[in-house]
Amino acid sequence: MKTILLSSNDIKTAAELLLNGEIVAVPTETVYGLAANALNATAVAKIFTAKGRPQDNPLIVHIAGRHQLYNLVENVSDTAVKLMDAFWPGAITMVFPASPIVPSVVTAGLATVAVRLPSHPVMLDIIKAAGVPFAAPSANCSGLPSPTRAEHVLDDLDGKIAAVVDGGACDIGVESTVLDVSGETPRILRIGGVGQSDIERVLNMKIALDTNGGDKPSSPGQKYRHYAPKTPLTVLEDGDPGIHIDRDNETVVYLCPAERANMFKKHIVYGSLSEPESLARGLYSALREADKSGAERIIAVCPKGECFAAVRDRLYRAGMDN
Ligand code: AMP
Ligand code: MG
Image (cartoon, rainbow, N blue to C red):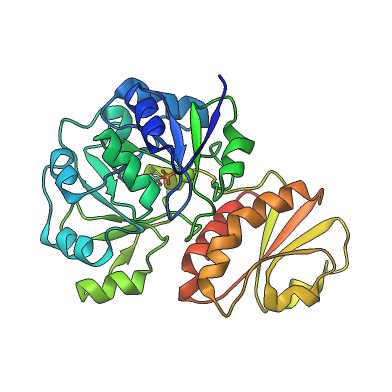
């Protein structure tokens, strides 16, 4: 298959391809997504094949307006409404009891469905032009760092998908926060673009973090290794005395905030501690660059603090099993 590179003006072409059952990579404010018509099970199945995604890992359904939510879910709690009012459009995904209209390939057979209203204008325009919601996981090969630019999508999926819409670099750079609002008490299943304390402030209560998975994780995606470059990666806490050990080793590349750049011979800066969002924005691109650098090992300097929660989560998962 030849993958067509579309521009953000080619909304109609992208929508037509999607309505014809093709899969198309699209920009969102979090990361690039690999979209299919969420109501077409055959189209959705192509996502799993192209990405090599495990069949039991459910997809997030993206909508362009709240009216589309009510067809997809059985019940919208008061908690969910408060969160939608505060954070949609934006980087928060909510898990609801699924309506029978949602194909089981989307939910991986669960009784719930994850839904998000993104803010990226190109993504919204394509959903509106197609008139259907899109199931869309990150547009990378399963397990690798998520794509934050169209070229990252092509690095992983060229020849396996119908098209990629180039919308420039993603603003946030890490995935959405996933929150389960299907039960009595909301739980955070994945920390991402929206912080835990922001959610707690809106709901005026403490929210449990249930992001570690275990044998029977509430969010099936939690049990897989994710976001990992091909080169082995070790995480070092910023300020850890061990940070000096390999600083002059030419076979190691350090991934670090700008403020630490002068500590290491071979390094890639992924953002600045003075602007926490910049570290999230630059993380995946830096991981991909580190893979291409020829280094035998990556050491990632991990910033400390709640404002870096999503970056910390991604780095520790990327370093799992190393
Ligand atoms: P990705 O699309 O790769 O960003 O991953 C989507 C994440 O949302 C995965 O970690 C899934 O496990 C999680 N997810 C999607 N649908 C559900 C659901 N119905 N219940 C719990 N977690 C979900
Ligand atoms: Mg993903």
